[in-house]
Image 1 (cartoon, rainbow, N blue to C red):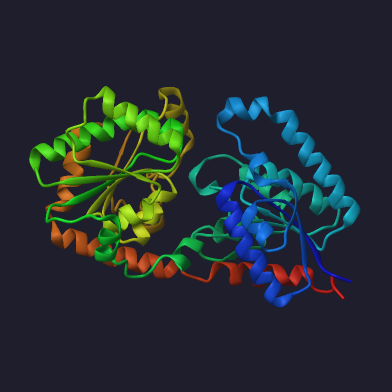
Image 2: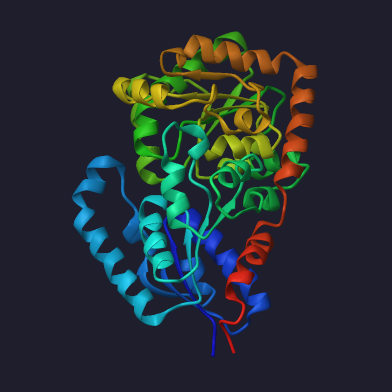
Length: 383
């Protein structure tokens, strides 16, 4: 009998993680079959996608409420299929709001439920971990400080490292990145990353442009790279450039290419999120910033218990890069913080060394470790 595994991945990042995991599991179980919700990378590995992962994508609370019935119907239908087909295990890849519900019901039906990518329970107060403990058989964590939180709650857990650390080189080639982007000259290069979501770009575009203007006034040789993830975010930034009459600034907008832009840069201004971890793995000095609605910020500040929001600071357990958030996210302060990195060679070198240590701690061959943690749940399930 062939081993069959149900999986759900949401969004492109989950699709990539799950495709690597499928490949790693097939090294041990060549005849394994996978079904559920997934994307093109999973399908390329032979995954039976009964719904595309794009169906799970929601954009904010309003969109989530509008699509609640549709998403609930998909989830109930998939649960019925899982109960009927009795796979050896259910693996939820990220998408915790969707997957934890399924995992709990699969576990209740006697099907091992594994969750790949811990929700950010370390960032918020409250009892979310109790719900997770009821729902999952095993948690796979990307960060080394997470397992102890689950062990305290009695949840089986494995640290598997972060997949970006496997992909990114330990010694990024800045000269090659500059050559590939056609960046030349002797002046400093600043990468400006206002975020991948439209709301982030709306909130930060004017501030980033104002920051660039101040840096240019202090150093006329500075140049700026602005990678934007989608045509929509590109349009928003273009609109801000016109609105602020910034055509004179040496700003080059790139279609995506965030990794290339950060590799080429001397310093990075980045909206808090995964891009800040990418900047750390690329050994780039950075300033982290973010701005959201006032009521949202007050709520998040009240619920959060860590003193930082940026992953580099959280992972290093100290404020090694500046965080200028909300009211502090204004051009003069941001320009001053970026200029401080450019002016201090010794500080930059110390940060690069610290980020190299972080990179090594996260480089664990994530897919192979995740597969090794899952395999015991599959013993006896196949022929």
